[in-house]
Image (cartoon, rainbow, N blue to C red):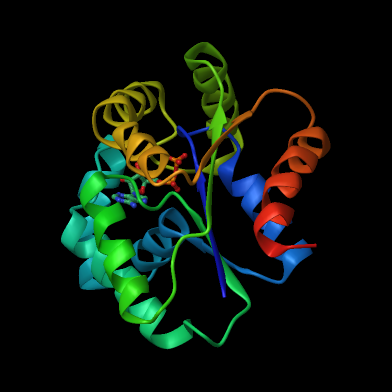
Length: 193
Ligand code: ADP
């Protein structure tokens, strides 16, 4: 099983690219944002708790998100060709927990690709998306907070993977196809095709 992390700030295109890669390589796309929004939509106890953090653009507590990923791995690890993680891990504690969960099952993270887009462009994209997404966190105040939270809590995750020599930086500005082609080169490097 090949495990890929698609890393980057909100609005950097992780979701778009993860979807294309998942389809191309037959990997399972795992978006913690989507999983959490589904819990919110179903008004589960987990969803009701998560919503209070998400609406402000704050991170949902590690224990909640790690628990969700643990359940998913128990369910799916070894049964799919690979995972492409999108929006997870978002803290160093989550990265450490993910390594532990995978190691327990004799798997590992094979590659981390980090999408780079400057803040002005990110805000522009997210404000645009907010006009159609209906997402309660795509308003300017929550967007600004998400970028601050990214800098404070999530950016250090890149160093965590750089130390493991797994990190590749990718320019996230350009056409979806061109960016995807660069990502595929990196994935091919670990898939071996
Ligand atoms: P974006 O990357 O555009 O912010 P996501 O769908 O990835 O969108 O995440 C939306 C929200 O869901 C985040 O702001 C956060 O509140 C919550 N969330 C998603 N993934 C995580 C995670 N790994 N840890 C904590 N909170 C998360």
